Amino acid sequence: MTAKQVFDAKPLWLKKRVSLNNSNIEEVKELLANLNLNTVCQSAKCPNIFECFSKRTATFMLLGSTCTRNCAFCGVLPGKPQMPDPKEPANIAEASFRLGLMYIVLTSVTRDDLKDGGAVCFYNTLKQIKIIIPGAKVECLIPDFGGSRGSLELVLDAKPDVLNHNIETVKRNYGLIRKGADYYRSLGILKNAKKIMPGIIIKSGFMLGLGETGDEIKELILDLREAGCDILTIGQYLRPSGNNFKVSKYYTPQEFESIKNFADSQDFKYVVSGSYVRSSYHASAAYNYAKINE
Image 1 (cartoon, helix red, strand yellow):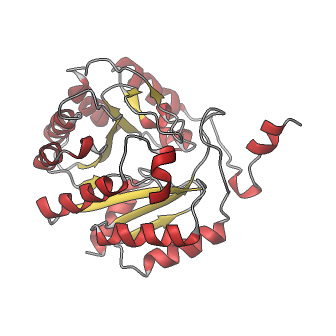
Image 2 (cartoon, rainbow, N blue to C red; image 1 turned 30 degrees about the vertical axis):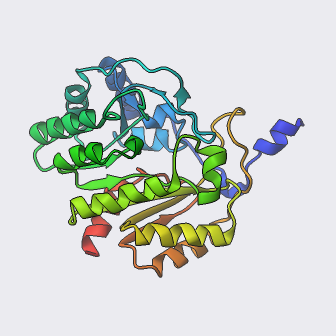
């Protein structure tokens, strides 16, 4: 057995049964391909992709599949992206309608090459969805827009039901694995969103297994709560490829539960913590729990 095989070996609690015997999976793939749409499920190599596709749901990724940044943990390809597709907002709304979605999560690659960071695409897509699917709830999982308050305000002008921006990891890791991002800038996005639109649900999430300490995890949770975060998602970092940052530790289910208990004590509206938790995984359920706890 090679060193790489030993490193990539996962503990028993991370073994996940995947059933590909579901016609919805191919139907979703075909729909996305026909409408020239990207999903974070595919581009980021999400381990939950087949489960979500089998339930006819996906997280749409705006503005192409190439990111202008190169975070060490991420499976999305970095490089020089293409110009935005003007048909994308309408196509995402069409796909959402055809899939029967009533809760839609929109995210995007980071587009530092665009003056607004891609905010207008979020705005247009959300508006298109609300026209075609009245009553639908929309969650916007946004990049940091380079810290632009104007871009944040534009997204919020479209009235998303949830504003999500992932902090991703503890403060100390930013220079190492989140080059181009800034810990306090990300916290500022959450704080400003709550100030601009006080009634909105604010969401964020981070990964474990990137070399963080217990004290750093607690500090991060406290910072997020102070920033106005309502929904918190905590998951295990899983290396997308051999070129990405190495996993420092696989947390046990008991450790995830202990961290959740600490977060619960800080009065979040909803906390979900576990190995396969991802920011948009069961997002509609998280939203419903948060609304109940308002």
